[in-house]
Image (tube, rainbow, N blue to C red; front, side):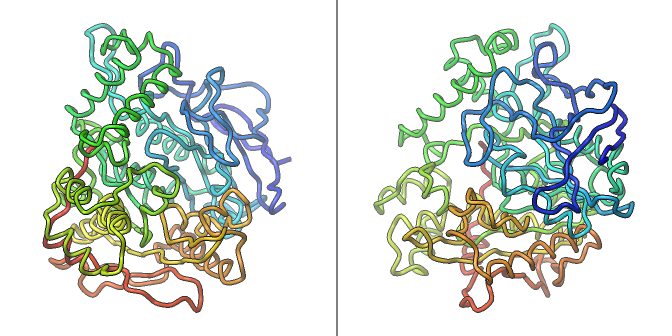
Length: 507
């Protein structure tokens, strides 16, 4: 009957449409709706229920303005947003490894209902797969000033939601065949940085045993920056920047106000770092839940007990340009201003230009910005973890192909459908360059196998990084390409960053 018993009550799932040997349990609440009296507070446990709860459809998405292909849009009338989804082998063995997925989306959009996150193919490899929704935007990551009345609203509420979901996994996943002692938490982009935050947070200690980071984003706000963002959003919403004022603004009003703040940055080339790709929310290094930026915390020795697998793509930022979320940099002067706004030395820009002699200025900018935001940061997270004594694996995604009349690069997000084994859905074909061919399916088989092996045994299929002073002595780095693709240098700029240093960015 595909009925499972959790601590809150019984739930019924459905057989996966892709594989009848897999049960999907969808839209299962792991915490109470975070609105009304619980708005801007830590998540509370979900209320228990009587009878069997039907869990055959994804739960509502968190407040956001984005509408993604193949995914539901946010509806202000639906408040039960803290739900998770489980894919597990039907009547399978007990004690299976668990893979928990945290979606990305710049901390302001996305959901677990995206078709590329379907867990069927990974569950067929002997995993119990969990995906989850969490609070986004101001609801999840906006700073709420204390007012002296009632309990203070914590920063990083989205991270607290993720921790609550992991606590639910610890307490309930055995009912679905999973082992609470074999939990791997994976994420991409802002989801990957969320996982890195969990690795170094005392609140999450013991809830994850392995971690997978794909394209972690270099962005963690100090408290002062988060407070200034609150002042801007409150002004755009027409309310005081106080707890009472922000509570008086509906979630819909704060989403709209946040979009207005973002648009002003987009329109103002003199507005500094936020002009180029204005992400205004992210984890706050509050010294409580999050002691510091994850890179600093890992370098200081936090989290080495968690085994780590890191991947980034080799052409990260071309996707952001393709979807129009990035400012256009077309002249040498604009490129120099960009570098100055981020504190990048001129010799770093000169190094990129000399190694890309035939590239246009926009492509030099995209290469530089992608490494600053994603590739170099991800690589340094891996190396810091290895230097601190952690067991660490590093890989790069470099698969490219033509499609839709243009070239599709090894860009941001393109690796995730391959790792999940979800190349069939039309909604991912923009990322992957059209319907998959045999070589694509073979690459996906290898990547999904690496995830499954790492979650099960901590062995993705290549050697870990060395832990020497350089962080990567004796390292091998797995490069993901389709069979027969031409090999290309994938670390051609790392020495330039080694000389220039990597600034840590604040959203």
